[in-house]
Image 1 (spheres, rainbow, N blue to C red):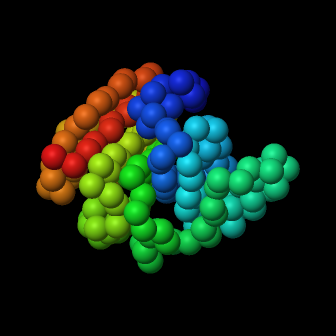
Image 2: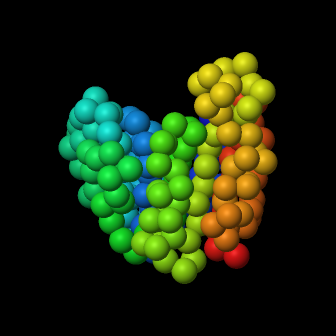
Length: 166
């Protein structure tokens, strides 16, 4: 399951003025890529092991622009005034998607962009089919919140969508 870093960076396009929230960051792979160019990266994950790994890498590499929150995202977003949100194969697994999207829109800036890396609905690898979101399903959810598809890309078993405020 290889995802070229260049594609993710192109879709998120981190800049020094960005405050990016990586929701369900896992081991922080993408968070550390974003941190090379972004002003601030906020890691949110509920896994003890994932948070331990991210904190260890931050310490080992002396990364100064990453904040780590060990939290259940359904209990609230721990930051305000972010302009980018990244879900790396995590959105399909979030039980409070509707509440979370409302909070993202209320706490995000006017130039908010939300990027999703998700498993294709008909792919041979990934979570159970009934958990996956097709591109149309994801677009429908985002449309309900007034977000428009800004860019998309297709990978072998994933797709990537970036949405912005309409």
